Length: 33
Image (cartoon, rainbow, N blue to C red; front, side, top):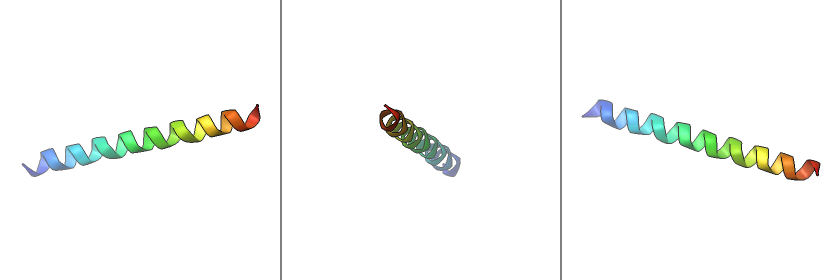
């Protein structure tokens, strides 16, 4: 049961990092225009 929790946590962290990176790139891209 515990491994499922850690797997879900890992997926959440990955999604969060991807979303944050996407936002950062979007802001940089808009700032350069």
